[in-house]
Length: 381
Image 1 (tube, rainbow, N blue to C red):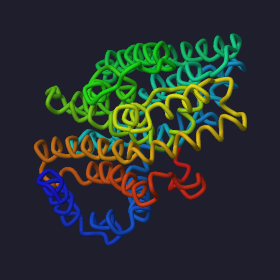
Image 2: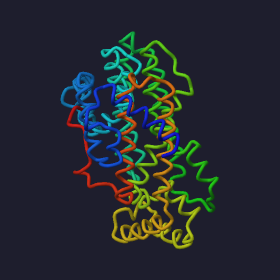
Image 3: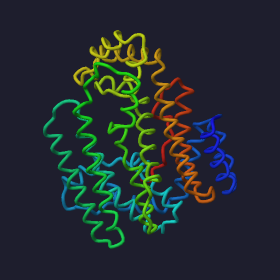
Image 4: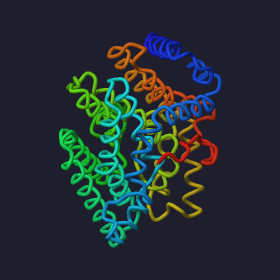
């Protein structure tokens, strides 16, 4: 274990001991049974922040919300684009940072509601619109129209609360940055570089690539600081950038076949092009498969298996996992520098869930579990 990793594990272990060392949440379990550790983290976070999530559910759940109930089209689309589990995972950083910075629970809950309205659900609609693999003008217009209406509904709620007004620039900036990144991604997502080297890989990770799309991590930090009457230093908000990149790289491992079938250029593919002795074979296979029109056909599926084999031969999935792990460690060290262990137990769980996921993937040769076996929050949202 290197210095950075031992520093983080020592910090997480101390935070765990301070809260009474619950057996199921011993950080050492990440190494021995990452799946059980993930389940235990979910259970603790759900029970500890139950009142916050209950308020969010009361206001934003499709069967509870009061926004535009008189507009059947809006209500129907809210049900279509509402995704409780992804929204829960986006809000966990908000409650973890809010807890560490001692945010008032009512203010924290309202901040989560505002995020869900302005960014969470409308962002899902934008995501779906930009992910349409074939031109479907009606669906695209409906998605974006709904996203705009949801965003405006959330803005209206924020402007009616004096204590939430300070969050409005953060949340609207989030939407603007997300749209900008996704528009840039759409322009380049089907473009396979003629030449890839180590510098190209570093540029992909560090630059304005799709690895920065999960801006909600940084937003969680800034929101928690504002709720505490403070301003986050850039050295602290960098936590969000590291977490965003770690999350996206993990997604690129899990979704590698779907991404390849859609022609999306991701880190594993770029790594294989830079490192593999089978570059020509890989390029031929990519050219045969990388088309939205072929995403669901048999030839595309078989070609994806061939590409996956070539990515495995070049250790490209493992390289993505190692890179994601390094970003997590960088994020962990920011927490170590900012907080005492007694303040940061929820943050250690948030971080260690990500480590546990990567460890689980590594043990399974970078293949995700069947969806039914993946730990999920129990319907809080």
